[in-house]
Image (cartoon, rainbow, N blue to C red; front, side, top):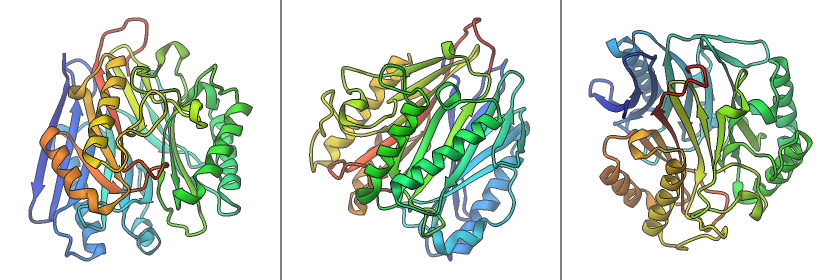
Length: 383
C-alpha cells in the first residue's frame, strides 16, 4: 500500500512555490516533508525571507495541516553571514541555517518537517524534543565550536553532542540515527573532520564490526565565519536495536570504511505502522569505492540514482515511498541539466538543488533522501 502523496501550491501574490509530501493512513497520524522556494529572484533578500515566512504561515492554516506541528526547518541561504539577522526571531520549531545557495538563483529556500499530534518543546541544552505516545525524538541542530581546525572543531562538536545525549539518557551508538556534517571549504577541511569522527566513533563503540550512523558530509558554511564544522543530528530515546536495520546495497556500493570514512549508506527504522528510511549522501560510486563516470554529469546522476534505488530496495521500498530529495552540485554550470533530469523523472516529488561541493572533487553530484513506507509489524509500537 502506498500511503505517500505529493502536493504543490504556487502563491503568485507572494512569489512562493510550496511542494510537499504527506504520509497519511486512515488509522495513523500524518507526516509531512515540505520545500518552499522563491519564484522571483529579483526581490531583495529580506523580501524573499518574508515571502517564505508568509507561505509557511499559510501552509499551516490549510485544512490538511490542522493537526500538524512544524518540528524543524533547515534554511538554505546564499550568504549566511550577511543573512543571519533574518533568523533572530524565536521559533518553536528547531531551526538550522546553512550556506548552500539554491541554484534557482534565489537568496534562500527551506526544507521543513511536520507531524500530526505531537508535542514540541526546547530544553535548556538546545535540544528540541518531539514527543509521541511511544517515542521521544531529539533534534540537535547547528552544533558548532568556534576555535581550532576542522579536526579540533569536530571533536568539540561531538563531545558536546555526547553530553546532550547523556542529558536525555541516550548514547551515540544506541540512539543517534542520522547526522549532517556541513564543512566550510570541504576540499581543504574534510579530512580533519573524518579523522575526528572516526576517533569519536571508536571511543563510543562504533566500529566496522558494529555499525555507524547514516550521514551526509557536504560543503556548507555557518552563519559564524570562524566555524568550519556545523552538525545537525537526530536521535530517538526509546529506540530498540531490533527496530534498526542498516542498508548496504553491496551489489552497488562498498562499505564506507574501505575508503577511510565512517557512516552508514542508509538506515531503516521499523515501527508498528510505518518504516522510516534515511538515505545518506549518495554519489556515483561502485562497489569497489571508485568514482564512476568521471567528468560526465548525466551518467553520474544515473549511477547515483541507481545506487539510491538499490538502498531503498533493501528496505523493501521504492521511488513511490520517497518523501523528498536534496541534490547537491559542485559546479553551478551543471544546474540546468540536473534540473531537467529531476523534473522529467520526478515531476511530483519535492526536491531542491543546491550549490554544495561533495567530499571528493571527482563527484559532480550527490543526493540524499528520506522515505516513509506503510507496514504492519506487531512487534513494535507505532510511530
